Amino acid sequence: MYVYVHITSHDEEIRMSLLGRKTLCLIAGASRGIGRAISLAIGSCLAEDSDIILMSRDKSALENVKREILRKSPGVFVYICQCDLSKPSQETFLDCLRPLMNLRPNNHYDVSMVIHNAASIGPIDRPALKLMNSEELTNYFDLNLTSTILLNNAFFQLCEKDFSTERVCVNITSGAAYHAIRSLHLYSAAKAARDAFFRVLATEEPGIRVLSFNPGPVVTDMQVEIYSRTFDSDIKMWSRDGMQNQTFQTCDYVANKLMEYLRENTFQSASEEKVVLAWDRTRDHLRVKQM
Picture 1 (tube, helix red, strand yellow):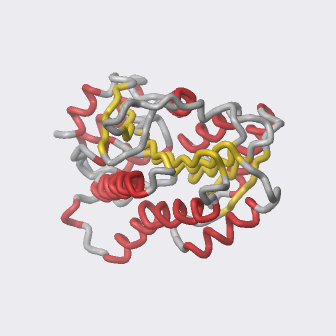
Picture 2 (tube, rainbow, N blue to C red):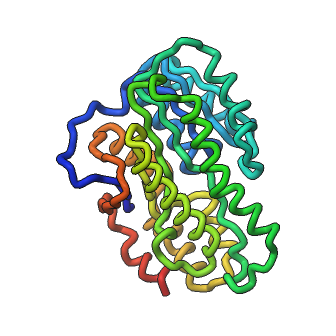
């Protein structure tokens, strides 16, 4: 697993852990896969009286995640935010978040954090030159890019500088943003655009620290979708072999690795990007992906 951490050339500051403190945490794409695992992991790592907002369009799945969090961590508060991220609107996001954040007025948090995990794989059943429908492209980027930007800005509009001691943004990125993986054209483009947006945000807003976290290949429903829908036989074999041979990681492993980075809290956000190798079992597979 590769983890991308934004750093500066200045001497590294000593910071308190981002975990174990009173936190408001919004997790987008929390109903399944990596997002579900992150929700369960962070629920066990925050201080009592913290607030967790789970966002997805699948309310039933979110209710299940909420029950699991509260079973393990009864001292935190968990709220459901059913929202269709494929129809991005700043007003909609504000209307969805504001009532939840006003349930306990005058609360001051140590940390306000948003974790951007929501994503879809796109039309991987055909090559890039066969993408000819403008509505399809618009719908894809609405879900995978525009909604991320608008949700991020709505969250920090509500979590202003005096709202919490620290403000943090976690962007779940992908190696596809930097490697040419056949059939993952739109997915790669959206991830690369998100990474670029958050690099700029980090330089413009020094009070918001940005961690771009790449989990590497993981066994998820999306990975199954890659295997079943990609037009490319090499990518299909790579996906099948990674899942069958257990060279891809589990969602729980990825979530726990993210908790380590939040617990250590040694990253600093800026425009320069450094790659930290946390898990190198994907190296051979990355060669296949770039064929």
